[in-house]
Length: 86
Image 1 (tube, rainbow, N blue to C red):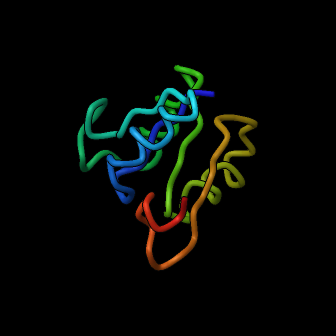
Image 2 (image 1 turned 120 degrees about the vertical axis):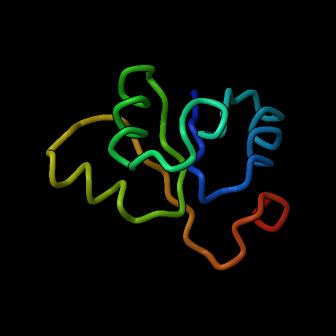
């Protein structure tokens, strides 16, 4: 599984996920930090990545466009740091 981590999550997630053999990049290493969610979704779809986010907009984008990809994984908690959620 390859994961693109949204701007609203820490880049520290890359290292944590790598320990489990998951290739992960933070969006800031791939695109503009102010890119719209639709751009992140398109990039993830074109490159075969799962979007990892705290933002509810990604699920809404999938529903509104009736797209079947990319997959989206949301973390919904107040403390979103990888060290807290491990």
